[in-house]
Length: 271
Image 1 (cartoon, rainbow, N blue to C red):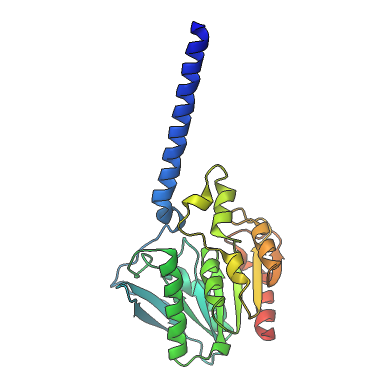
Image 2 (cartoon, rainbow, N blue to C red; image 1 turned 135 degrees about the vertical axis):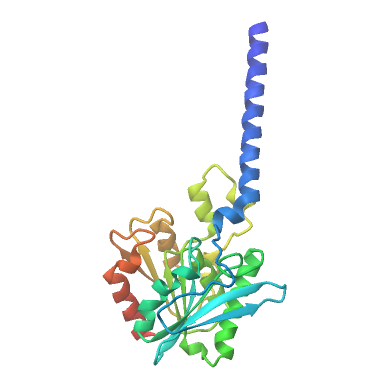
């Protein structure tokens, strides 16, 4: 009996230890999720952006006191304008690389930095992220761009921002580079032992928002993307959009893929 009692005590202690460790792990991810999902990189407020494309820096003040930074890259004779939402590891310093192919195609290109990224200030939340995107859309409209000239472009985490904005806007179209079904779904894929639906402050339900998008959608995804698996895009495309799967495409190499640009050119000519 003493052996059984000792075994029960050891098992109880092991279970307690494991459950405590699991609770600590959940708490860590809950408290640090903003830094994990949005590993923001800053740019000095007085830094000069040495872009070689004609551009205009702009700042938008939010109702809650944040200041958002954006850059409009200008095409000489624009056919329209791209409103761009970047990935979570980018900031404005990499935006000429993103903008240049579109400017060469005669599309102006407006990029924004999320709160705490680049020269933008303020605290990130899902509500603020979506509201801030709408401010940049409003900026384009008040600057003289018609809704029929505005095309949304989202990359990676930025696809969640673009889709939500598209769900309440009637625009020319939307291009999605490596989108996810929902951030909750993606978190469950990467962290299967954690209760993502309970922990996430950024559920970003792209699938739900996509149901309300009325304009044309192009979805581009790498076949070998390990950060956002292809099935995320496949499931979105069942709701809306043309899905193009790029063979040998990974998460960060699609810009160098000829078919990527062929499909974008075809989409822009069609809409």
